[in-house]
Length: 421
Image (tube, rainbow, N blue to C red; front, side, top):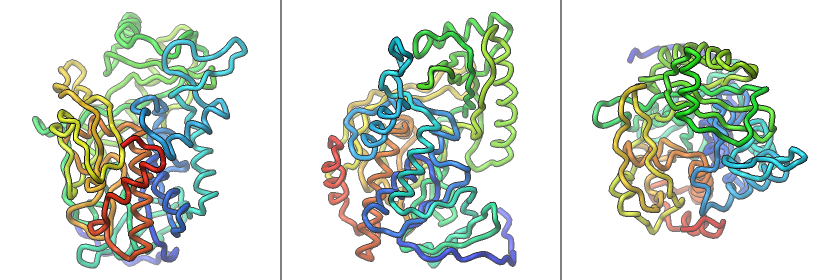
């Protein structure tokens, strides 16, 4: 990688207790939790909205692994249900008046509003349209972050930093090791770009994937994903369609990420035009990446932990979801799925091996290819973010370090918040 020496004038945005890089679901949960407990928090997000995959990526299915979750997950669903921003994934989705029944499929725009409310009420300094582009290091510690913003360069300083970028961008800037892809061939699971259609007559909340793929093929549209998904949203007018795969998109290759997004938008149009009825609506503004780097932590979750149903004295999140691995090519057989017994994510998996004032948040936490394919779903990541936020507050208030914090304190907090550990 080429080293650049650049002279720039950057606006200093000040010093905080906690700086969170990445405003997806886990990053929002970490920022809000730390701020609610008295920390001065800055949250850095590249998009114009918070929520990441749920909002900018149009992945609103939060029915996966919702069980056993309290805290912010429960708060989230209370708001969604109260404002009719949720509906079931299967069966009847609305009453005779068209009001949706509560469920696990949520409104991406409703989530945007809620995350804004959470951050405003908690006092989080939220920077949209902003990316971390550099980390100034002092040995194994981050001294400050350099941001590229819509308004020019900026810097922030903090006692503790949280990497919630999804791809481990900040962790890799800080010198942390990581792993990526299927250990059998090094390839990632395919990325996906979802889109909305209006005017479709979808009586139930979802349709059979194989039958839907065959119906599209009969019109001459042979998708890169032979088992597309169509999912009704709580507004009762839009259907979300995931109908494409983008293979071999690495999380560190901006050329591949950009090219795949543009190609898949064209495929979205082809799918929409294959329907006799319905109109193309919003296309996700961000390609759905299932895998980023998994950062090396003090503890690394493995498929053996899943097979054995591992529980830990510093467990912070219950997980029961299957190992969901998508085939790397359209006609390839998916990787074998090892059995899963309910297990826990330990606090130690959020502590990076190679940095001293950094916590891991979201899907980049320390785990192998198979464990990641289980715990990565949205409800689990919101719970992990809440645990990270509480840990960050302990560390900032006590001027300690992630490694020295007794993870049992975080576990007890999560238990008090209603997580079944």
